[in-house]
Length: 146
Image 1 (tube, rainbow, N blue to C red):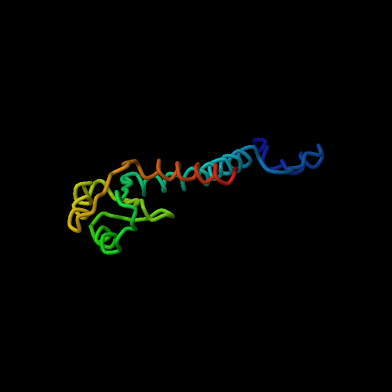
Image 2: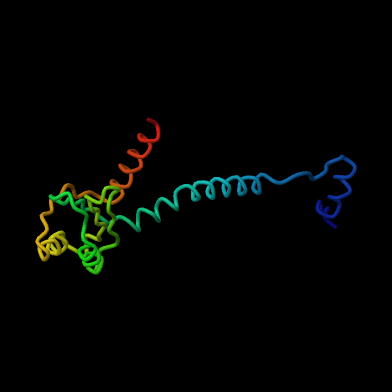
């Protein structure tokens, strides 16, 4: 009959004072890697989702040549164009920011809405939506700081 080391393992460990304590190396490695992966995903996933949602958006900034306010009919007309996401006037209501999806709408369709009521409008800038949002945040921070 051959000697079976597993048969008397518990007795040997008891005599030698070997006790199993804590977690094994593999378990600790898995826990640490999960913590790192979850931490990184909490930071990066919202930014990636935000980018994917706004990557095709552009902002066109228009200004009225006269110092009057924007007619509501023009703003609602621009909002009805398919692909226009948002229109915002500034504090003094002289500038209009139109956020649109550049895959669905050309800038010429938006400017055509200004020609109907014979408004003298100037296109000040056409920028990426995310870039415009970052610029607005920086300007607000500068105003708060001063």
